[in-house]
Length: 161
Image: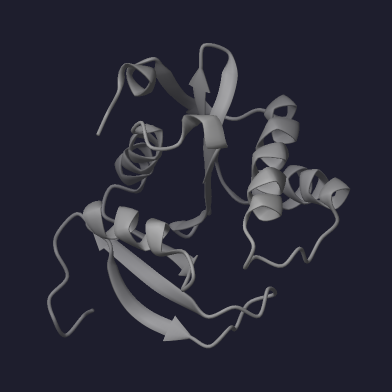
């Protein structure tokens, strides 16, 4: 469901000056998510985003009248490596706005990983046309089971999924 708040959002490429806000959104999500282990100190998250994520492809922010409501990181090889919303901006269509912006930029396909414990994210991605294509038992730094999702502008054929 899209609200008037989502209509007030402008998707734009992040600048280095936006990295503290993006890191803050991620840190608050980690701290509020009981099943998510903290593998990096809070202060290291901003450095990582500035030096690694920002350098590996566009970071798209959802700017809501000057406030960063959420962000999406898109790697050069077509992976959504992060999609996080500030808690106050969830459930109003801003995540949909960000993922649709990523689809426009990618044009033909996107991939992403989400944690098996994150049922809300799975439902969101499936509503947006992503299909689960692979599962792991925790082949990530958090050691948590995860699911690889794939989206194509042309639907996947069963053999390709």
